[in-house]
Length: 65
Image (tube, rainbow, N blue to C red; front, side):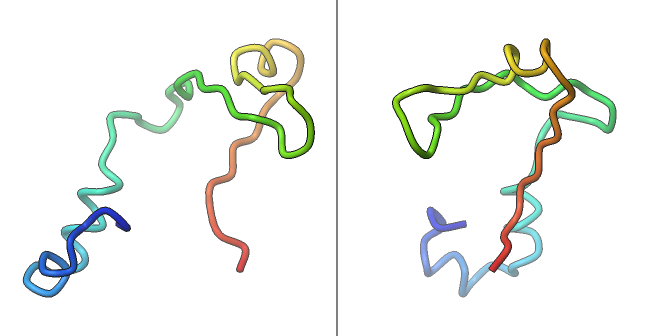
């Protein structure tokens, strides 16, 4: 939502913009797309496909503030 121009936020209703930003092609039960993320401390990266081979992985996307 940070990339939406302010004018668009004023003119267009919030709900359609939010649902458009969240639109995707995954359904419940579909495998997550593979991705790589850097570790917070260190120079190593974590790749989903490597982690999921070793143990179950739970992905949580949200805000805890």
